[in-house]
Length: 159
Image 1 (spheres, helix red, strand yellow):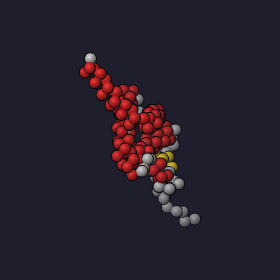
Image 2 (tube, helix red, strand yellow):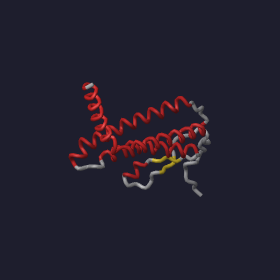
Image 3 (tube, one colour):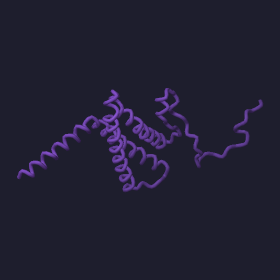
Image 4 (tube, one colour):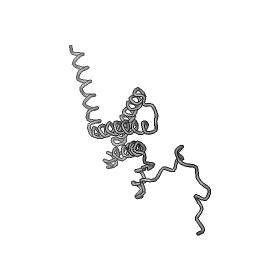
């Protein structure tokens, strides 16, 4: 009976430490889940627009893989916050790390949304962080549906 109490007490102290460690990051977990679900929805819409077949098993597998990746990134960001943010007085260090990671997913969500609606725009929110205003740019990739260039398209008319 005494051994059981020691095991329960040890487990409770470890779980309390883990809950205290993860508690500040619960909103980032919720944001990660929302971003993964949005990317899943817009990615399926974009694939339908491209005429690709949608395989549910692959979509679910990739989404679960993203959730696990984000949990790992959240743990890394929290660890950086505890190791470097707290001693050096930078309480927003985990948020900065996750903003960079989530920025990639936000770009993906916007780009899938525009592609699903037939737009050739691309979003890069990292340009916004650099202070640039041109975060939306036309896509320069060649599309199979584009007409071939005609002679003189790039030349200025001499009239």
